[in-house]
Image (cartoon, rainbow, N blue to C red; front, side, top):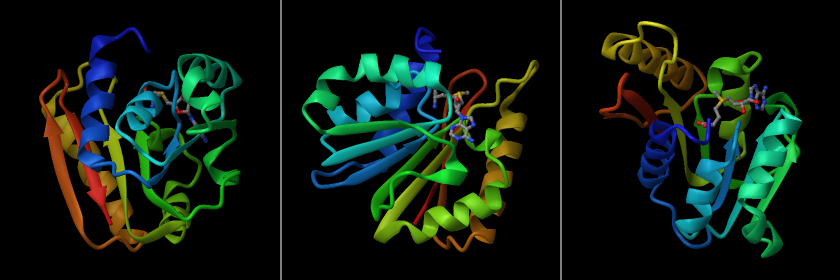
Length: 174
Ligand SMILES: C[S@@+](CC[C@H](N)C(=O)[O-])C[C@H]1O[C@@H](n2cnc3c(N)ncnc32)[C@H](O)[C@@H]1O
């Protein structure tokens, strides 16, 4: 996952949309090899928390972000999104190609909304990786995410697209 140039571009773009500020307490769900965690730390977040339910991914991400972990700017844990080990409040939450794997995503998003600080923002990114995925597949994925977010009580939604093949959608909510 970490070696695909498109995954690096996707992570960098997603983090740029979150407009990370010093003092931000950011949570990433499903960090995989930890590319976006590294970008979030580089962007100057006050603290970056991350969870992934895979021990293998935790090891990869911890290695990639070892210096920031030592500096106590990043904390990673092996955990599932339905058993969050960090309470928040978070000023920003990010999920890149992971929501599709969550158990009961509608309920998870409602819980995450409650853990956001006032004015906090959430970014859910999707680049469909199924065979034959096209721009239409990305649009459908974005629409499903928008519906889930509205159902979870998020009001201000904005969807951005990044021109990879297939395109990447990022739905931002606050
Ligand atoms: C397709 S990978 C994406 C990884 C990374 N975000 C990226 O863009 O490269 C999905 C990740 O979500 C994680 N994941 C799946 N279900 C999860 C769950 N219930 N809780 C936390 N992480 C989960 C997987 O272990 C995997 O690392």
